[in-house]
Image (cartoon, rainbow, N blue to C red; front, side, top):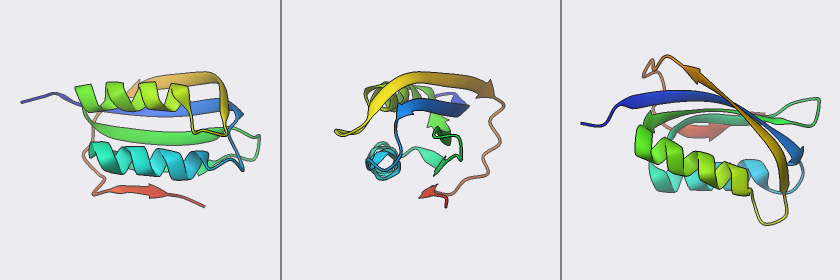
Length: 93
């Protein structure tokens, strides 16, 4: 059985108003990753993703790549303790 992991992520760059949250939601759903994503007032996107380590590693690669219209300049990833609190992935507003 794979280890479950939790990552708290801050993405900087041209990531708001370009479908980045929708892209994140779609990628998470296709991988079976749980958590959430939202825009921050400072122009960054914040996300929490949880799941099996290989899926989370793939999700992080996809977030670094970004949506077709976005440009990711930086991604800060903070390891957190897995809590198992999410049932799905959602966009927060």
